[in-house]
Length: 162
Image 1: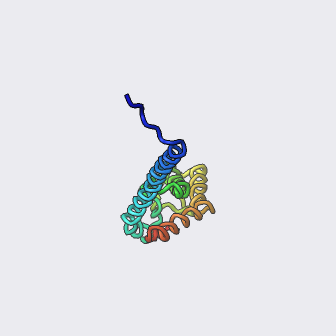
Image 2 (image 1 turned 135 degrees about the vertical axis):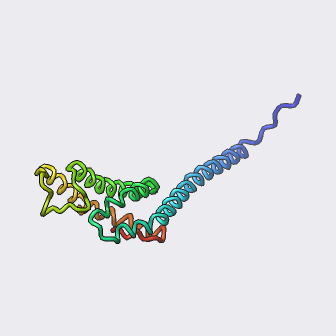
Image 3 (image 1 turned 135 degrees about the horizontal axis):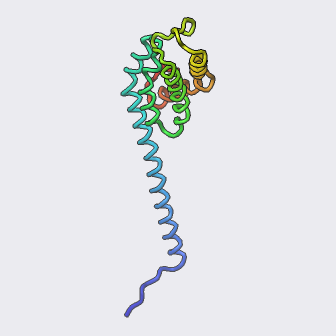
C-alpha cells in the first residue's frame, strides 16, 4: 500500500499561505461588497425620497420637519454605518419635538410659541421649547449638514435639508 504523498515543507507553507490569502480575499471582498451594497441601497433610498422630501420641506409648512420624519427614519435605517450617528441625531431631534407637541396636545401646524393655545401648561411650553431648541442645536445642524453633504457627494442627490 502506498502512503500518502507529502509535499516538501516549503511547498506546504506556500500552499497554506496561498489558501490564507484566498480566504482573506474572500472575506474582504464580502465585507467590501456588503458596504457597497449598503451604500447603493442608501443612495437608492435617497433618490426615491428626494422629490417628496423636497416638496415637504420646500412647502414652508411650520410642521414640515415633522411631516418628513417618516422619510428621515427610512433613510436612517438604510444609512451606511458611517452616517448612522448623524441620522440618529436628526431623527431624535425631530421625534423629540413631535413627542413634546403630542404630549402637550397641540397641533404642530398651528402652534405659535408667542400665542400658545389656552390651557397649555408652562411645563408643556417649556418641553416644546427645549425640543425645538434641539432642532437648532449645533449637533443637529451639523448632522443635517453632514447627511445632506454625503447625499450630494456620494449619491449625487442633494436632500436640501441642511
